[in-house]
Image: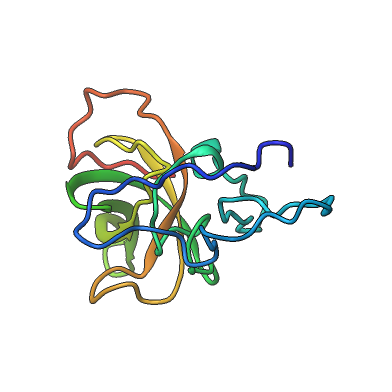
Length: 166
């Protein structure tokens, strides 16, 4: 872990209230004789083989709902989906396509579900990208997932409603 921030960098201030991470005390006293210093930015590993992004370790954003820098644990389902909307603040809509079998006709029909997920500022997500989301505690009325990995769009020309399985 050589990438930890040793000196304090001012957090991004875009809200009315002062933004600071809950786990970091900004005005701590520096002890002269101590060998080991705690880092000035709280980051953690989500686990499950998911790498913490560099933007979360070296960034200056404050997000209490981020799985890497906030107070949210990932447990339960891990899903993949296509981003179809990024219009909300720190929340994206993901489309998951699947096939449903109709036994009477012995055929499959195409179906889809839209899932709202919290997107940390560590990820620069655009429409058409493929993201991996992990289940967490309910963050709002409709948001129960968090973005944990991001893959850039391979083909940007495909429409929002085209059927795509993973």
